[in-house]
Length: 242
Image (cartoon, rainbow, N blue to C red; front, top):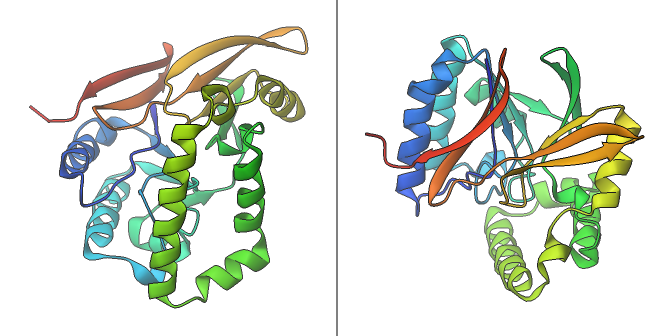
């Protein structure tokens, strides 16, 4: 069994999500061969050198799962793209490129965070290209922590304000881009997060049936996609463990 989650946006202000995630790690995830976290795991990440006690606690919980035998894979999101190898070593997880192609249930599957598919959001795509540029990343990682904290707050506030103002189709994925990316990688199953719109979308890629599985965000409830011999199944669950 493989589990896939995304968009937990972990932060100290949401202890309910943290409790649910720790419960998830100690129970359901222990039964999995692998856990894939497809971005926006943390609400904000200013660099491995700026890890808080809260973030160290999360890393230790992941390490316990890894030590118990579950492989953990982490992909950057738009909120936590500065996560680096120091955190991954502490957490016992491996960092994935976006996109990442692999085999699941005998078929090629493409994993993405999903923000790069929102090509109609022109202002965000320009910002994303700048932020993900290797030179920009080098500059960001060498800024003082206080400067990075201020910049993260500014970007987060601007993102929230712009998202409220933009039409829903602009902040969602572009269908043509989805088909283009899936065709380029030779897959008929794409799994991503980012949009906070959990669903399974049926489509055609090169005249063949295909599907796009959108992972749910953890807010009022948690979400996990389970992949096993019976197929791909995503379901929500209560945040408060019983």
